[in-house]
Length: 491
Image (tube, rainbow, N blue to C red; front, top):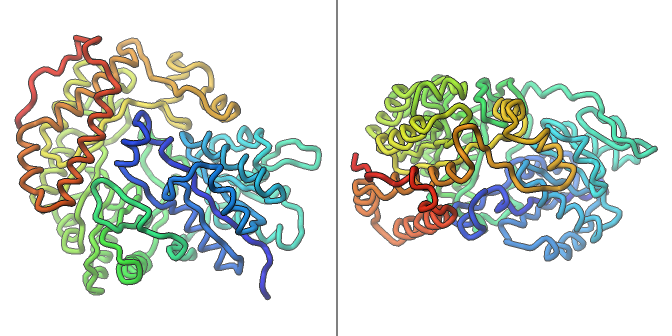
């Protein structure tokens, strides 16, 4: 029996997430499909509903420009997802939708809603909030809407009752298997609308796990500590579809840690090779989950680049962060990756609580010593739901529950983490110093030019220079002489 309810999934313009970069620099870094929304769209369609997907970021649309397309689809339900930094942009979309299609039922979910669902519903442009994994909850919502039943009290939601009071329903038990869910609805997107500075075009993104067993103090991935894996066959099925049907040249695996389980890595790599796939891929990993055997498996299957979070250059600060790795493990992991022939990228954090100037200087020097192809440096941000945020509140680095107020007020000036040791301005200066010291090294410049065999590689370097110039312009180094550039490393 055909179903009448039409569901539109809308992705907000993610340039807001790329703090502190300008929109121009953020666009250089990349525009990516929304895997959560595309997965939810596929699951909703699997249940017999008519769905569509609108990506404001890929189209580079202003919110008001999207109104005619929203109206043309005539949606009954509109689904939005929100990360914390993008919350104001999601509100703007919901307000536009409410005006353009007054009768549409607006549902919002995502990481931010798992933390501040009740506060989010103080915005009357949203009708219902989803907490945690969305698939089972969202289908219950759509089914209830289709059948004309009440949407109050659906497990895994926060809702308004008949009197307008915001209430929280019972939590929903996590699905034990994520293999039940179909691959994202790739047919709904034009991959030509997505790009990234360091990726082969066209590219796609995938996720093969949910949950994370580690508890890094700065990380806001709070959905679930329970780790669930997608079967390697289903992963490779999707890779094959993307290569053969969509012409994809590279896949970005956005798992928090792709390399969990050596047996799993072996099976995955074997399946990729048995299918004869030529698509390249890149992964995120922890330095303590890779060894030569694992990286050789993955390299043979098409691994092009590995991204690993280092965060700090001293074991003392790594322990404060609860990172559960050491400098020695980090140096070893990146050395093996280089020897196997895999491009490397490291992520580093400036200004964690209890960091000293010596910690920061050593982090910058350590990054330059690892032989990385790329490095990213960020000033520590006390995101909601993190140990860092708890400490920041306890020590008065932020006023009260900043993110709760941010949710209720629809945004606000993001807090700069100032400690007893560093001002916000000093931390920004250290970040600029880190970028300059890393990317202006003669050995790295020579290496990048030696790899630049064509127009794409040269454009990649020019794009990187644009981002670097934006970062440098955001800091006035001359006002903070004690954070001077010093000698450029030549390791």
